[in-house]
Image (tube, rainbow, N blue to C red; front, side, top):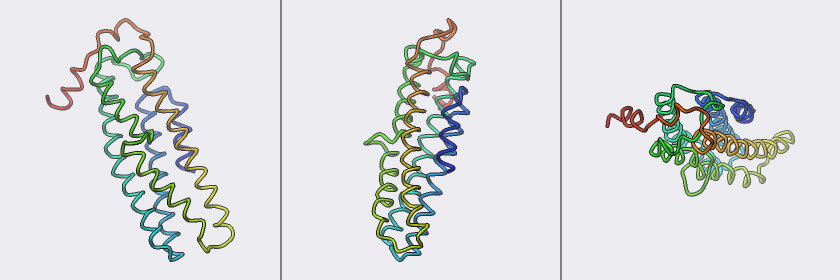
Length: 195
């Protein structure tokens, strides 16, 4: 529920930093889902699958730290260069800010779970743990809840891909809506890196 609610709220945002913050809630929901599945599988003495689910959760936590930091760094650079956080007023920044656009694309693809980037592997491992957990001997309500949780997880991944296409497409690929955006540059990004 946390993953679904977080990504649905992210889909409704027009503020680029708030969009990323809500998507962090979605990723936290995925991490907690993986840990909960690992505990459930361990209780059912399916230790190999429990290890797989736990590794997926920890790997996703590690991945999220990297790609979300990169995306917040890129949005901070956009904010510093344009003075604007509203997606409705941004657009077409790929030409004046090619380095930021390139790094934001890497972060966006990783967070979307596109292979061969790191976000794909952690989400794929968790999905595999869900698929192989059908042999669990558990109370009836849990055997019904596992497919529902797996479907909610898959749905949150799909909506996350939409949100990130919206995020990247509007900021970098969309039409410039304001003449001051043409004066933006990558300088803020390199200042933040200390270069």
